Structures are given as C-alpha cells and as structure tokens.
Length: 135
Image 1: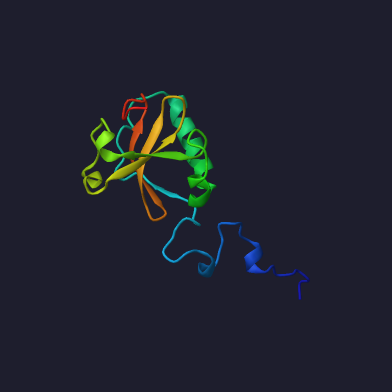
Image 2: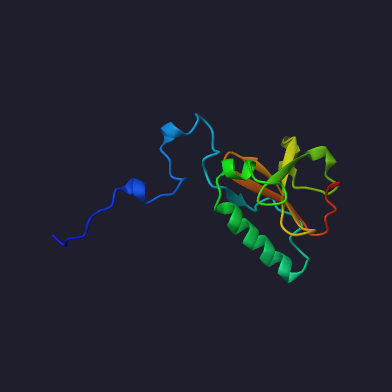
C-alpha cells in the first residue's frame, strides 16, 4: 500500500455540498448560481473596466449559495426584485412569460438584470447606464 489515506468524500466539499435530504424538497437555495447569457442584451458598448467588474462580481456571486445571496444586502452581493412591467428596455421574447426580474449591482451605474429559474440565473440585460428601471 502507498501509505496515503483516502479522505472521506464528505470532507471534500464546502457548505454547498449537501445531501438531498438536508435541502427542502424542490428547493435550489442550497446551490451556487449558474449563469446563462443566451437571452442577454445590452452587452455591446460600455467601458472595458465595467466588463471586468461584471466578471469579478459574477465570480463573487458564484461563490455563494442562493440562500446566502437572498440574505445579502442589496448593495452588496444581494439583489432587488423588480416587476417586469417597470423595465424601460427591450428584452428577449423569453421574458414574455415571466412577471419579475432580479437586479444585481455591478458598479455604481451598472446592473445585471436576470430571471432565476431553479439554480440558474438567466441574464436578460446588462444595464451600463442605470436607465433600465427607476432606482
């Protein structure tokens, strides 16, 4: 034998690694978010530094579970819920079937607007001028 001990697999994961029995039935709040840009608009234009802030913020958000995100401050890693009817920008037709979106603060002006479906955040709009909805 090589003398190396095999770790118990349960010790390899963090808080996000839970057995299905510890999560409420059907809830995905214990998962880390996955981001989908298939329906995203507003990605053209903007300053290069803001795109770096977007990537950094998404990386930071991805380290949290949905439960942690929901309890975060709106101006931190949290989000605010906005009725779709309050948006002032055109979205992909995918959004026609939803009622509310969530907005994450990327910088002082930039917001990422999306729709959560289970553990996936479908990015719908990247607002680089803070004009997509009334703040």
